Each structure stands twice: as structure tokens, then as C-alpha cells.
Image (cartoon, rainbow, N blue to C red):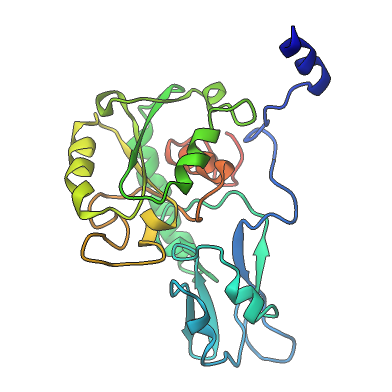
Length: 270
């Protein structure tokens, strides 16, 4: 009886995403953006000038990249610590975006290069050919390859009443032989390289690999070491890259939907 009353009091709490936009509000730290050029600098949109020599050293993971008089951010290395925003708020800022996944590693570096659009179109076409046989019921095998546990909390949230991934036909499975998607968290430690390959080989074709979190994308805060890799790409072929430390449940859901072809290029459900 208390559950019935609670349901009547709160109504439907499950998100309508991806049918309708959803998020966490304007204060959410989804991504680090590079602000457009300041007036009068003569630089193009997306870059800034007169980068302080010590600015890149502010980032503990090397995500801030100095290029001549401009600066870029590698979101695949970013752990959202905010040090760059504190050091140079006129150049960097947080964006509340939750759709953070990319089909290419280069797509996580901003501002993006103009030629990325053509490469992205080729990646989308290749991924579509790969997953066109998948139907509306998709099984995900999650594998921890040396994470700090933060990503696991966000993955667990996908099954709660707010996100309820099963409404989209997405189910988690314990067996790689039943899995269509391999969701990998962690840096890819030496001890997990073998299990990662074994799991990947046991999955039937077609199969998708998602690098979930900064650790899986680039190795995270401490990389490489004698026991870890700079991400899992040196072990497995990655199809979708989801940045964040940790990525939010919406970002993880966006990466899964992007990988299995249930999102149109605009980011909305087809």
C-alpha cells in the first residue's frame, strides 16, 4: 500500500529520453568547453589566443592542448576536475550537455577540425552496416577492466525507475555469448587484457565495444603504468567513446543508443 500511495504522489518519474530531451539542469558539469575567441583577437570561433605557457600544466591529465596561439581540450582525457576553468574562466567553461559519446576518438577533442564531419559520416555508415541486423532487444555485457568503481555506480543507476533502460529493450547479461554490446570500464590493466579479449571473442557477431569513462578512453589520471594501458583501444577495437569521470547515466545511455543505431545523427530517437 505505501508504494501505491508513493506512486500516486510522485507520478511517473521515468525519463522520456531519448524521445524527449532531458538532463540535469544548467549547473551540471557535463563537459568542458573552449569558449569562442575574444573580440579583436583575430582567431576563428572555438579558439583563443595568447595562451599562458603554464596553462596546459594546470590539467593533471594533459587534456589541455596548446597549439600555437590557440588551445584545445581533449575530453577523452578530461576528468572534469575544473582546474582549467578556475585558472582561465575566460577560455574554459562547463557545459550541461549529457549526450557526450562519440563514434571516434578524435571527435572528443574540441574545437573539432572541419574535416571531422566527413570522417564521422563514414564511421556512422560503417556502424550502421555492422548493427543493422540487431533488433529492438539488445543485451549488454559490462566488464570492469580496472576502474575505480565510480562508473559502476552510474551503470547500476541505468536500471532504476528514473532511467529504466529495459523500456528501450536494453538488458544486461552475465554471459558474453548472449551479448551484443561490450561495455568496458577501467584502464585495461595487464591482468584484465586476457579476460577482455576472451570476452570479446566469445560474443557473437555483430558486436559493439563501448569505452565507458575517461579511464577506458585514455587511461585516466595515472597512465600508463607498468600494470595499465592508456585506455582499452590497445586491447580491443572500440566503436563508441563515452568521456567523463564518471560519465552520467544519460551519457552512458546515449553511448549505448548511439552504438546500436537507435539514435539519429541529431541525437533524437529515429
